[in-house]
Length: 242
Image 1 (tube, helix red, strand yellow):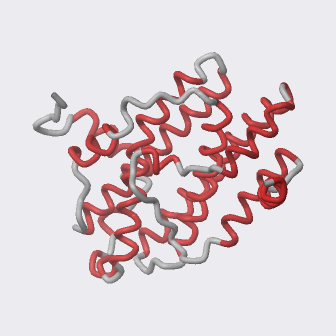
Image 2 (image 1 turned 90 degrees about the vertical axis):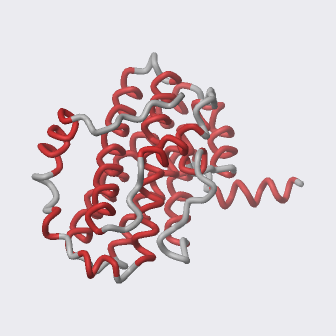
Image 3 (image 1 turned 180 degrees about the horizontal axis):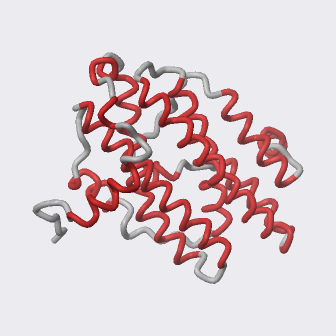
């Protein structure tokens, strides 16, 4: 049985208010302007659900990297900032009045991946790096689509935090590559098979823009900086071998 509280914890609500009411002027949200762009609200809702899953995913990563103090510190920051994204997006949708996300919806999403165990450090770091890289582009691209002023101010900070998260993964991969150069091929292989962490639990994760060329190019550059070989070169060389 999945426990669902009858009402929210007063302590949690108080702490969240202390954190977020100073950051976001919820009362200034222009509901009418926000509702004029349901495409953006749909994308926000999807992003909110992805962020809600990270509570479970980062717990799995803490277990996988338990011995690495730096890695667990990074994933702790990731867990907290993913929670802030989840809270902000969820509350924004609630204030606007657009398909608010329920606890049961979050529970159902998390349950899909609950029994999965991830054991390949390189795979998870590559997927984490790519996911956060794409999330940065996602939030920055959304800014260009948004007219509602509170959301326009909220998104850039979220995008900036995703840059740090991607850098966390890059640093962890670089350290492992330095210690064991033989994992270079593993990095390239997993990059070629990249899977957005959101897709571990969701059927799809959409981009904000239809043309993701710059986003893909940036990921390609990250891989080349790490390994000395771009993903494009790797895929071409493997195709020629076949």
